[in-house]
Amino acid sequence: MNLASGIWNLEASVLCAALAVATPAAPAARGPGQAGEPYSPLKVQAPASTSTVDLAVRDDARARAIPVLVYLPASREAAPVVLFSHGLGGSREGNAFMGRHWAARGYVVVFLQHPGSDTSVWQDVPPLKRMAEMQRAASAANYLLRVKDVPAVLDELGRWNGADGHPLYRRLDLTRIGMSGHSFGAVTTQAVSGQSAARGLISYTDERIRAAIAFSPSSPRAGDPQQAFSTVRIPWLLITGTKDESPIGGQTLESRFEVFPALPPGNKYELVLEGAEHSAFTDRALPGDTEARNPNHHRVILALSTAFWDAYLRSDAAARAWLDGAGPASVLERGDRWQQK
Image: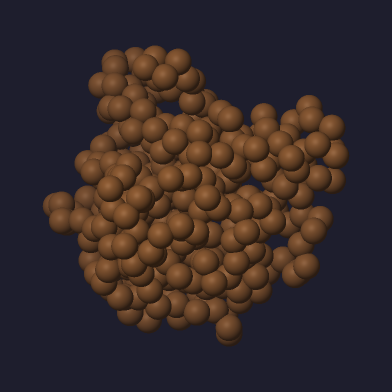
């Protein structure tokens, strides 16, 4: 079976640039906010002091180095960990708006960079050859490299967390891990967070992951979506847009919208942003976009993703009530769609 048979897609921002519930644990400390205040996923303490550290994971078994960029909260107490996987042709430096906000809310955020499907695919390549290189990078080999990068990074985080003198020493609560990604990174996220392949015979699920967010999710082109997603056992949040299509992988709106109905019920959510294109989930608008940038899209993304992490990584009852109640309506605009099951 060809594991790369169109189940992933291209992060639009990179292409444009190139061409021109788990069982709840005991509640953790709340994020920013004072006791008694109404829950707000957008609130951060002033000043929202965060820092970053650039590191590399060495996977000797595969002779592979995986660069990571880590966003650290101001507090030095052990914090829940969120991983992020970039789209095809991207890097660990993308989606900084998410890293900064999640870290300001008290999470350690680890952005992975996947060699072979990162910026090296198109950098230093003549413009007329870049599309062909992108197509070649959307391969079964790179898919497998990506899904194996995730446990390799988690293993190394465990070692760093116990290494006296390391920047991450005792900074990580590795009992509370979230996984996320955009586009090819969403496919990576889906694979390690419960989706199965080959009629349920192949699984890359990492049981350490407690919750997952897929930005621009996609249904497998081969096989039955109901079967592929029936094995998802943890909370999932899907975020897409009404114009979230991509030129590589043949992903359509229909393939994005097939995922949520195929998920088993229980702590599953879907947000569809009106007018949001594939690049809406990245840092900036780029040539090739057909819609004006809507600044509320990032506001909604940060609000709902943060409430989701708070609810399912921190076991925060107020966050869960906000997410399952009237909270999302307070940030959504007309035409945006929100559903849960």
